[in-house]
Each structure stands twice: as structure tokens, then as C-alpha cells.
Image (cartoon, rainbow, N blue to C red; front, side):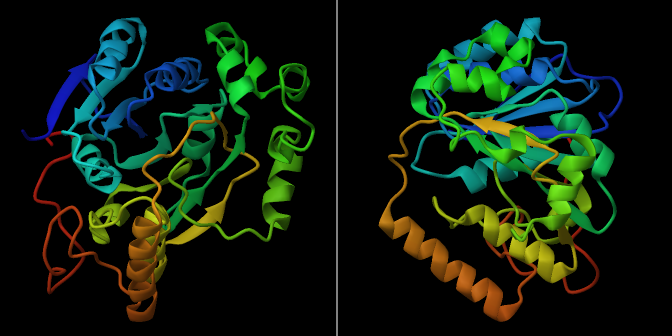
Length: 301
């Protein structure tokens, strides 16, 4: 069985931005994440769900919620054959319609200014590296749709009253505006590509041939960002300005074998200063002349 694509509320005009959200068998968390995108201050973006083989529960959530969302929504699904996040992200890139792509996960609820911040700060020759605040399981379970619609889920006082310790409440939730921009400038953290919160231009993503589909869990996003950097597309820290709240859950797909394999691929990418993965969007070597040219039109899949 091949990849399947289902669309709701197809836009007549190409959207300004496409948000690609990965998911796998976390329908309750995905529903909360979708509520976060429904509450965004910016409109006119599309939402693409990159589904790594979830069972019917995820499809049922989308069937129920999609008609209520004032958003163009696309569900890209392939069969469950183990952890293949990189492959389904590549299929979602093909299905997305915008020239600028924002990536996050289905267990990460975006703050209301999340999409608008990425849209406002994008610039040529850069990718944006955002931040997150990881919540304990008890707090993750307590957040409901009204908490998301009203923005309570990113209020430090509300989080403290609902099971978060002060240590767990990230500084990212405590600073805003000019103070958040200042902390981004002062931060010593690398502006790496983070799968839960990063964005870039479609033409740059195509030029490095998307995500390496050999990679399992553990650093696959970082390897993609390293190829962008080798191409000259540098990361820009916006970790205190573009925020998602990460809901806790177990990770049965995280194995020592996959982490070791990914580490070896990353070592080779760094040593060779590679800008192209032969195991990406279009399998095979890089084009001999010029940047990668897609053999598809955005949104056609």
C-alpha cells in the first residue's frame, strides 16, 4: 500500500506558509495540537499532517475536527513499517503547497503567535530554529481545549497550579517581545534544525534533497540541518520567540541501534561536508549542474 493523501478546505490560492506536523498513534495529543493551530493569530496558512502509519484513531480525529477548522488541512499517511518519520516528512513536503515550510510535531501545542512569528522572521539564506517547553505527563493530561483557546497552557502561573515545578517552566515562557529577542541573541545554544520547531524555504529544502530516509529515531533532524548549513543556509535562533509546549509520552521507537546508525550517518555528513542525501526526496546522486530541481509541483504529491 502506498502513501495516501486526503484534503479538506483546499485553498484556491497558494498559501503563504505550510505547517507540516508529524504524528504517530498519539490521537489525544494531536487533537490538542490541532486546537493550538485553530487558535493562531495568523490565518491563511495550511496544515499538513505527516502521519507515520497511525491506526484509524488518528484518521477518526481528523475526520471529526477538520470540518470545524478554518484551515486548509491535508492528511498524508503511509503504512506502519517501523519508525519512518523522515520518509513521511518527505511525502508531506511534496504535498505542501507553500514556498515556506514550518515543521513541528503532533505532541507540541503552538503558542498563539507561533506561525506569525516564523512568518515575520523568515529571511533569505536562513532557516529558523525555535524552542519548546517540555511538560510533565500530569500537566499534559490536564490541558483541555478551553485552556488552549484562552492561552492558559503557556501561562507560568497556570502551569505551576497544574503540576509543573518552577524548574520545569522554561524561561522561554517568561519572556516576551524585546526581552525574548535579547535572550535569543545572548543564547549560546546552536541554531540547529529541531523537528519540533523549525522552518525554512522550500527551494533550500529541495536543494539538499529533504530528509535522509535511512535514518531512524535520534538526530535525524540535526543531520538535515547540517546539510542546509553546508549549503550556506545558516540557522537563526528564535527559541525565546517561537514557542511550542511539548506534551509528555513514552518513546518505544527510541533504540540504541537506531541512535548509533544515525550517529554514523551524521559523522559522514559532517566529514564530507555533504549538501545532498542520495536517500532523500529524490533517490540518487545530486544533479550535475545547478541546484536540485523538483520533479513535482507543490501540492501535487
